[in-house]
Amino acid sequence: TSGSAGAIGIAVDALGNLYIYGGYDYPSMAFGPWVLNTANSLGELFLAKFSPSGDILWAKNIGDGGSGAIACNGTDVYITCQYDFTMQSFLGLPLDTTGQSDMFIAKINGSGNAVWAKSYGGSSIGYDLPTSISVTPSGEAVISGTYVPGTCTFDTDVLSNNNLFNFAIFLAKYDPNG
Image 1 (cartoon, rainbow, N blue to C red):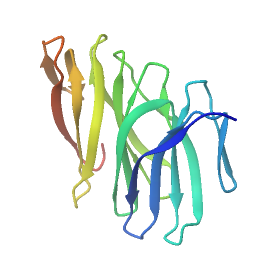
Image 2 (image 1 turned 90 degrees about the vertical axis):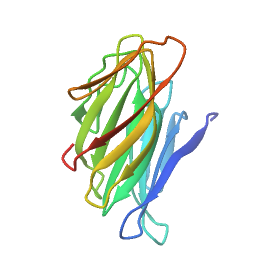
Image 3 (image 1 turned 120 degrees about the vertical axis):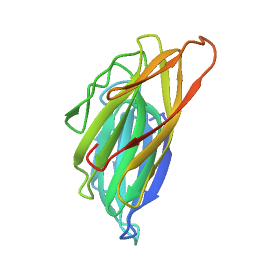
Image 4 (image 1 turned 180 degrees about the vertical axis):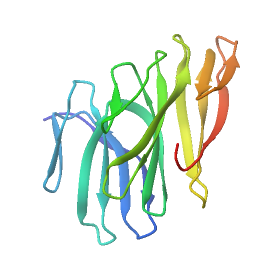
């Protein structure tokens, strides 16, 4: 089978477990006993957890998005990701789409279950791209990225970029409950 796979990012939790966040466009991809299948021809994103000794603990499809980032705090995992209108949920939690390209941030527990997921992003013609994520010792997720043109909304905070050809940057912080 032809296709490609790669890691977008890796993170290590407080217990030494390794998380790999990446994507693949094969019809299926195996992580030990976990076989992940693509839901569409464009490929899938995955999140996999390995023990400190390298044993696979679980692997999950998490949608069909683009670039993003991953970080850990304690045994929780935080990811941010770019996605388009075809992705309607993240591990069972709904996502809103307002633009051509939006972003989300999510908190996942050590068992691989979504704790919360929040959509953020811009106007219908905008292109939004998360570039990094970090988590403070108190569990606040800090994300950065770019958007062009129009607006970029984070809950009730709205940023504006009226320059059609230049990206604007953003920095946003979410509390431990999203």
